[in-house]
Length: 149
Image 1 (cartoon, helix red, strand yellow):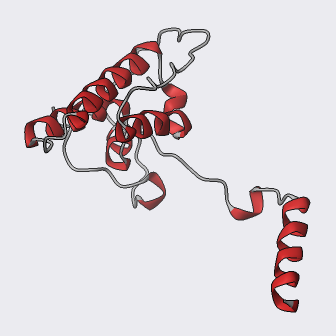
Image 2 (tube, helix red, strand yellow; image 1 turned 180 degrees about the vertical axis):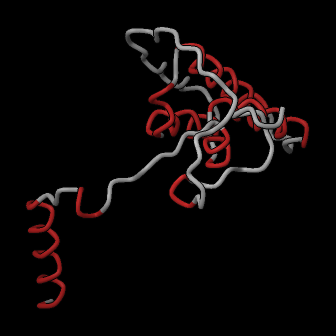
């Protein structure tokens, strides 16, 4: 459906790259209370490495701050499907890959998915990240040891 966030179409540009700043038209947001606490389930230790790595990456990705239990259940199901398929040793079919990617879309896994959902993740600038003095001291010590050795 054109004009509905998250419904496909071209990837919108980031808001800081827009020329016009008109208020978006149309879609009204309906709000409901979120779960008080959402805890991501652990990855199954028997999963294929690729499936486990993908699932664990969601836990440290910015969009997962918006995940509810149902989102984690969806991710778990996708990882289980990936693991079963990848563990057979057979090549992944195009249909399997297409199904996984389609399942990842509502989880906002890619930059394009996040933009379509009107979600932009921002990394802190270098000035905002405080330097750990002990790490700098260790780096200097290693550098000095290399230069003298």
